Amino acid sequence: MKILCETVVQDRQTQRNRTPRYVKSTLAVGYNNSAKDADGNNTKHLEIMLFTPQNQAGERFKVTNNVEKIFSKFLRDGKVTISFKEPPLNLMINCDPIQLKGFLQTIKLGLEGKDSINLRLNIAAATAIPQRSKPQEKMTVLRRGDYPVKGFPRSLKSLKISNIQLLKISFDICSLRNLTVLDLSDNQISRVPREMGRLSLVCFTVNNNQLGTANDWEWLRGKQIRKSLRELDLSANEISYFPLDLIRLEQLVGLKMSNNKIPRLPFGFRRLCNLRNLYIASNLLTSLPSDFNHMRIVVLDVWGNKFGMKVEHHLSEENNKHSTPSLWLLSARAVCQYKLPYSAATIPWLLTDILAESPLCACGKVCFDNVIFERAVMATLDNIKTLVSSREHLIYADIVLCGAGCSGRKQLLSYEQP
Image (cartoon, rainbow, N blue to C red):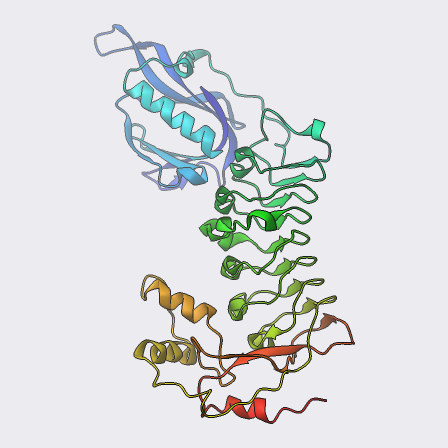
């Protein structure tokens, strides 16, 4: 068996690498049938042969009774290290995870003495795989006849499949571990599989599809995509509500959700602290959450929404009377006030959701199960440099108050409509 990969050979005695960085290589594994044992009898040993641009003839590493340890903790990332006893070298491998897994499985079969078609290579006659000038990193499919039936190249970093009436996202696409840019616009996709959450996508475009039909957003909970995704386009998908899982994409910089049917944005929208560009035109918004005023959005497009007039609210003592706050709510407010660090490992997950998704009072306190005063105050939007909206309608914000004696009441009671 032979694979294309990148390698570095490290000498454990001197702690030095033979090359300053990973180099393109060919690794072959098979039996050396011409090997002899201590008594001079013919035997066969499992060996690995390494071909590099610096050593095109190849370098052999004995595997049988000569492997000290195989470090495969990062196999899913395509990284493995094989430590040999003699000579004391570390062979560090960087390769496609699927090919690398098959390579290690072949070594395991050889060490167990089992026969395999991948072990029928005579290592003495092995040669390097011809290196391509550059692996394919970008692919565009604009016609159904161009869709690759046999799968996609594993080296792809950018993939565009547009306007071919694609009905679903195949597992082949979800297994492209190097993919960072994916454009599936203008198709008929109704569901994104949860496996998509394992990819390190930076830009995901899936506008003009039918994601609002199934409303399945489980893929947004994937740890990998939450860490990597910067740009997301969900425009024109018949989405009828704002998916709460979206606010977990805390690295998101650009979000496009225009031409949907979203009636309101959640108070937890403030969790998107890195968001700079928001396009949510032509929806059913009547107001924005008050926390919007404290975000650092630079470009905001809310054209074509149904922003309503300010609503007068009667804030009597009776309808704003609250019981004494519970201990957990006081603790949550203290965490927000003093910006104490927290995670799901230190506090219950329910509290992490409350801290992230519950609205903030005008005075800055976390509120939970409080009355929401819709379209109560003007949305200031001080940080926005580019605002696209209709001049016919003013934009008002929804607020909550933490209690009858809250100082935020003054903001609501003293407001005068211009």
